Amino acid sequence: MREKDKTMYFNANPATFQKARHLRNNMTFHEKILWERLKGKKICGLRFRRQHPVDFFIADFYCHEARLVIEIDGEIHNKQKDYDQGRSAEMEKYGILVLRFSNFDIEEKIEEVIKEIEKTAMNRIELLKTSRH
Image (tube, rainbow, N blue to C red):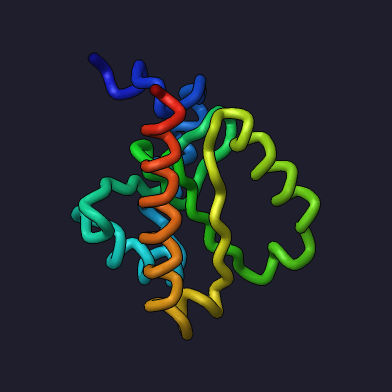
C-alpha cells in the first residue's frame, strides 16, 4: 500500500504532502530540539512523525497510535490564537488531540514537556482502546 493511501493522512492532498516535505527539510530550532527527543520511538515506544499532513493542515509532530498532534508555538502564535484554536478544533473532528507547547517550553522546560507528552500519549492510547470495545 502506498504511504498516501493510509488513513493517518485524513485526505491530505498532494500539495499538502509537498509542503510537508519542504517543512521537514527546514525545521525550526525548537522543532529540532523536540524531534531529537521524539524520533526513534524514544517516547513510550511510540512512533512520531514530523511535519505530518492532516487534511489540509501540517502538524509539527503526529503519533497515529495515540491520535496525538504536538504543536510548537513561536511568537507569531501570540497573534493568531483564534486561528490556532480553529485549527485544533478541525483536527479534533478526526479524533485527534492537539498538545501545544511554546518555544520557551521547549528550550527551558524540555523534561516537563516530555513528561506531559508521555502521560498524554499513554492516556490517549488507553482511551482509544476502551472506545473500540
